[in-house]
Amino acid sequence: MKIDLRYVFTAGLAVLFSLSVGGYVANTLAMLSVLLLAAALLQILLFSRALRVELVEPQGRLEAGEKIRLAINLENRGFMNIPYIRSDAEHLGDHRVISIPARDRASLPYDFRPQVRGILDVGTVEVGVSDVLNILIRRRRIETHPVKIYPAVRSDRTRELALDTVGEGSLFRTYSRENPYVVRELRRYQPGDSFRKINWKVSARYNELLVRRGETTQEKDILIILDMNEKILQMDPEGIYENALVTDALSLSRGLLEEGIPHGFIRTDSRHPFFDISTMEVFSQLEEDLLTQKADAREPLAEFIAEKKEFLHERGTLLFFTRPLSSDLEACEQLIHERNEVVVFAPQLGKSGAELSGSRLILKELEGPGYEMA
Image (cartoon, rainbow, N blue to C red):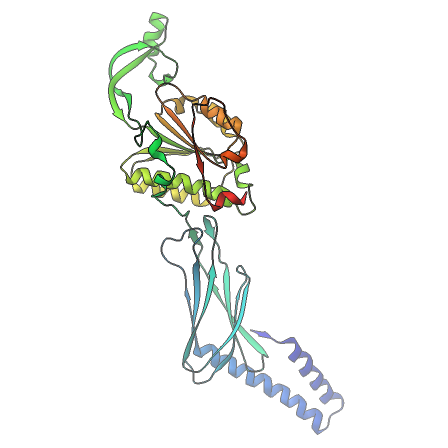
């Protein structure tokens, strides 16, 4: 409970005046100050008992860019009007004062619109009750729970990304790949073969590299690579550019999954996590992981490609989501061989000046308000 300092000063003067001067007027002022304090205390007890406070937090899946509402429902169950009810939400920068008639209800909505994914901490909300003269105020702290803000993933974004042109008119080209678990014979090593398929004992005997050849299978071997370089997060103060890039990559992944196309998803952040997206459960794990993971990689995309070159060479279709930097595009182009396709999704390709003459890359320009923030 908090007391108004102005009342303390005034009541103190009245008591000093009564003790030093005395007389009817001075004693009356001192007694009146005490009675006002007692009346204020009684009102606070009655109002606090009559007031019912309920916090209504947002429910369901909450996505970046949409309006989110947190509300405080108030009910006056007493027989007196409550003249002053104060609500303070420090994290939201919102302070309000309302009154509630007897046997009535009111609601204090707090609307906010987060622009990026993450864990939103609304903080503590305080509801205070004051007496008629604002001498005393009693505050009640209401603890809120962190709110998960997911990226605004849209599976229909797959068509907007114009992927129908990838693979010579089909959605994705089907590639012949060898099943490493069924070994039929050996063949000479060729550039681009995985070192894991080399039979080292036989190679040592014949003094040349020989790899295990498996039964040929047909599959759509797709890998999405999301560039999480820390400079992407610094493109704008709120990280809207980075969030848009993450959202587009997730939207494509969700669209492929809904079309029954399993694929891989790898990020270039400090952990380099890989997800085998074959079920919605795995995709949800990827979303949850990206709630708190922001772009923090210090190495550029070109260095990541050099480090993971063997792993990337084994894939039939590589889908990069990155910035339009010439050095990164050149590194992507070096991954192209006769059995794969490499697609680069990047915003503002035309304005960036990142051009590759005679490039065999398939370039797709990303569009959206999030990329205009940079």
